[in-house]
Length: 286
Image (cartoon, rainbow, N blue to C red; front, side, top):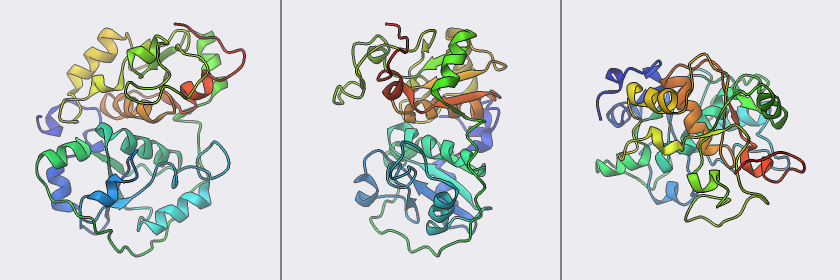
């Protein structure tokens, strides 16, 4: 894949290459973070110096279906050696779904100095780069977190219902089988998670993987515009809501639209199909 700065992104600084990580992983003021779906991946081997953030155990409230609060986020950042001015570089499996998901949650607390390692674990391993099973010993940092602000990048069920009423642009990033209501989860996964299959009325289906190359890197801006604007009919001035099953795949598309294409108003509906497909009285299409 071409150099990141040559791909025409609106915010090329949102990505770093595997070369950059190999050179800067141990720099003062930089913290490499791995976040995966599978909790066994990090202990089986990770980038030297990288800490782990578990999407389920670390980022979610233990009792409510919600994310951690301000104190919880501050404590998490402190324990990972991250201060307010630390540059955080995230990577993970599944072409960086979970890295994008973590980065999206970072935005809820205003930590905008966060980047994605282009290609994630897939590219790092394919290049034969060093992995270690040794977790780094990091010193606690001081972190001052603001109150979480969900208003800018997060959509709730009522927001989606209002979006339907105005025929707003909405992207369902799941597989075509899920979109058509033939499955309730991705192929090769247990077919569970909701009572009904289908999609939210008016949503276009643009699977998240459309934005990725075979090596896990992101396609260039021209190709992405062809996918989201040429095929799906989006415009950079549109208010857009993206969703999947629980919000992780759609955070990948949120990252593409906001950081790589420069869309100014994109929200991730993290309740997604698990909430919508289980809710009484909500409309669906197949």
